[in-house]
Length: 260
Length: 260
Image 1 (cartoon, rainbow over the protein chains, first blue to last red):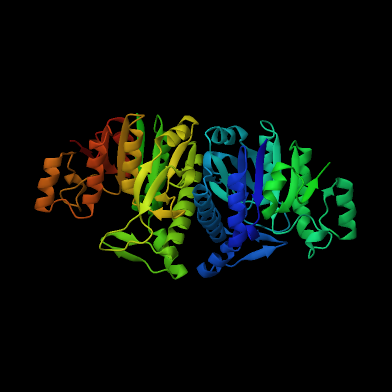
Image 2: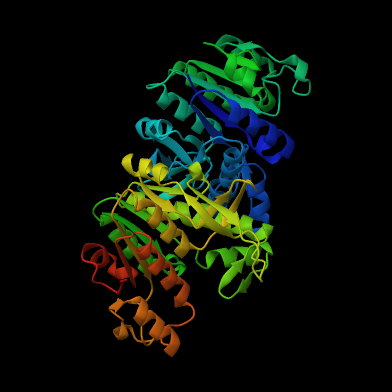
């Protein structure tokens, strides 16, 4: 079983939670891959550099100046700090983006009502090249950046979608356990009450909760990614708190388990 | 023969020269490794972020804020842009730092009269891990950053020294051709006249030129690295213009050839 673990920006931004997560991740048995979000550091750096942050429906609009910022912050600062901390915890982490080895190719998003700029929709994940990294004993740590060969450019990419695409591509070669880790206990009925975790979510229950408004707009793209991963060949998908990662990987019982 | 090519910051900063170099590098036959310097972008970003740049004897003093800047700029922006451009030229580039796979471990420099801050002196290069990347078909592209496991930190590292250390470590496994590329035709008798290239430099000629002042202070550390590489097992060392890389690799006749 290969674990593909995604951590959100809120975990990256929280030193205590991040440190605990990194220790737990380092201790996970078996082959594993980490995909990290960006966090608030990109926005803070952008402010200092005089680059305006524009968000539309929770997504960052990425002009050329902002692409440089996210390439620096996600691909440089955050990625290399995570790698250094994991290495210091005995995990043979190896940081990369979709451009390295051209392992994740994407196309600049066009045809939407909003021009998101240098944002990539994933076209192809090279599972063979990623598998060769795993075989060499490395633990790939992905920044949320992919590569457009036609533009010879990095593209900013949603980390949830990137984790799903990596998991699906590698499901040709491995049984995959995909875990989305964030700062809540799972998909919640009441977003402010961690005791209201939905233990198991099926497509019909998801549809029901969307209609009733129990599941918030912000969770919907994450859940769409989770269901797509399952339907495209991933064995197990869980959404849980970053502090529950060991349980999620070992038994699949933490947080919200996604089922078809 | 494995080519280890180092390009200086002035090549990175010059779009025309850089583009020609990347095309030539992509076209080089055989296994190869690129090590890049930082360029002026780090200083420009530091200015915008309000981080003061302090240079002592041509070396950057790296406090914690500057370490973040060079990790962003060298490990993120410059490294990933070089990778994206090489990939678009058909070269299977794979960007990394010394932290990735812990391939280059260093120690924070202490005991000097100047406190350079988070600057690393290289302790160990893991030739086996780098060789596995080469065997997997990747072309490693190194940013000038290494890894201190005790501090769990990146360290800023001189790119000339890093190229020499990589070349020496891999000389256990390959015949190595080490080429230092910059914006001059080689080691010059008159630094303003490209027609005054010294075609061959031996230790005795180097000593003579140092005494007479023909070789400038700035060239001395580069040449110390070049001679150390040769004496520690590297087959061939050349210092040349970035535009002469194909000749330097194919025949070893471009620029200044270093000999023991």
